[in-house]
Image: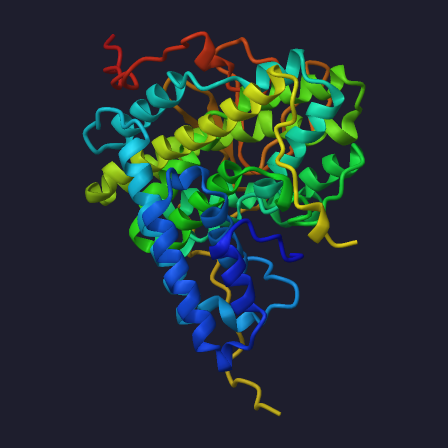
Length: 347
Length: 99
């Protein structure tokens, strides 16, 4: 991915460090980064909305996905980068555990866990970006919607795939069954990330991974970072399973409305296919995710029960915050995107 | 150059005799998900009333059981909106009818 802009001292110091060679890391740059990170973590008013810290974590995590253009791939596992991630993750996870509203935990069992997840996701009173998209969104807002979504959707399914080797037994098989479908059953042109790229190109947007990172707010980066954090820590495998379940369980009907919105704005199947496909796909996935993935995992490893619901609740909470922000901006007649620093944008 | 193995590769057709892998003779499985759709796995065809094949889009499909899907015969998640409920447990096997 093209290197995104820094949004404050920590992300700026990280980018300075990443420009150097990991085999001869400049100790003063590393020391500066550590000091600035510690200070920022101590001073942040809200880590979920902190542009600088979420950008720094997003940059460090991107080394695990497509990499950063011009940055040595060896930085991915460099102790300084891992220390930065660990510092931010500690406070990020703490904030989610404190703030994401947890339901009453059911007994560990396939039926009880699935029923409680359907209850939790069914009573989600989050803002309805989907209803707004279906009925009211302007063409410009529909473009903003795709730009905001692109941060995750262009690598759709990847954060949850980290969990495959971390699960065993029925839960692993269930995750593979879902992910295989996410990846188009092994057909490139049917991969969901590729379908999303087709939708973006269909409305005239650039579908290059990370093209719009600089204009999305911190909460959008936080939503993506949360998935990577849950997926890439074995300790949090319950949370990534719960996150996927909640995500799938709140997807079918909203996608029908998104598709209707784009049809209302005059777009054809090339643009709406992604959403129409998700109505059908996620109606399958939510059943498998709730019972066979989350339910089986909580039954086989009851100590993960709480984290299954932590992951589900966190997903609903963070995406609810992002949706509220988006709708507040739109109903106030303003943009839901942030203004990038145009001076440092690449030509 | 590596020496070819002395033993040819073996392929055991009886390994999944009770649960054959994907193939023409694979039995289709249909799982009733509580308060939700029927999930169908295996090799199957879904036909319209006039006998035309509905092209499958995925290996595992969910068939509508509540009657209100807008994508019938497939599930679109609508059952949740109408509070569709199925029985808690599958019915116990019925005793054979005595003459």
